[in-house]
Image (tube, rainbow, N blue to C red; front, side, top):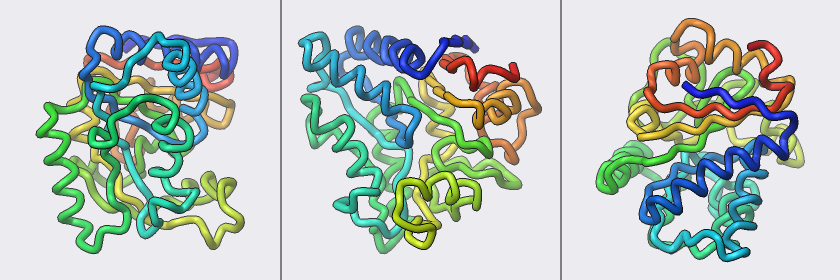
Length: 241
């Protein structure tokens, strides 16, 4: 496990982007796992900038999103399909046929989850998985639980996750309470994990995940078992280490 601490969010984002840039340059046809939320926005901005400067080519890369809200139309401006288009895919030369996002509107959720895992396996697994961490220690939408959920699955979102996501919606009542999330197995099977965290409110989750016991009550703690994890933090998120 390699831990990199930067002074602020901008430096954190640039450092994380350099990891992804190297992956794309060395392996243009790589499979990139994408995270959403506030934390990776700076990373995506740096990657878009590199593409616009002619330094990166994403045409051969393949993308798998970690998660999607349940029962939220992809056209909804709060869906993660929209988030990825707005903040990343619409600004690079990504092949639409190589972009994979769980179908939150699927009638048969179990079948959709099995399909998603099969697609990941068909592409040989994920080469570089970008991750954030929730204040409760979730990765993707793998929430604290009595056990680790290995495969892609539907999840009822934790109250703390709903509260954290409420800032993106007009009211608490509009925040989805369920999601489809990639499970622990495809995350851990990724060749490299890149975990980002910023802000004082993530400091305790980061400490517990990296220094505490491995337990499903804090899902990110499972990353301690991965042989190639890069952690990029700003100074505030690293304050408890």
